[in-house]
Length: 102
Ligand code: HEC
Picture 1 (cartoon, protein in one colour):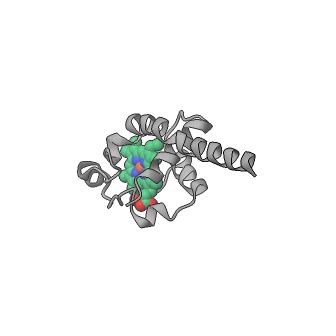
Picture 2: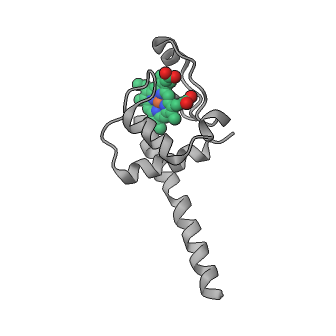
């Protein structure tokens, strides 16, 4: 029983560990368009002629991790695919997106 509890705590620690690294990925790959808190930059929204939903909004947060990764790797509407991310960087940036939940 005691071992189980330790494993559980360790696993939770690992799951959350991606977020700080994901923040670094976000800052370099996403923030220029989506803003520091994922709120969306008005100038970018205007340029693409779209309404950018805040990434912390319910509509975006209700997407699964798989759907979010697909948006990042294949693009979505006016957003082009973001190239050059490793599998781990994708996991990390999705973990960071979850911290933006409003
Ligand atoms: C060149 C600017 C740009 C970059 C860089 C960019 N995005 Fe986007 N993103 C957009 C725009 C514009 C939209 C809205 C597209 C539309 O609605 O047609 C969008 C939409 C999204 C959506 C869907 C939101 C919704 O309302 O369903 C997600 C999720 C997302 N971006 C995540 C990311 C992540 C994560 C990164 C970095 C890995 C990133 N984006 C990088 C411009 C960008």
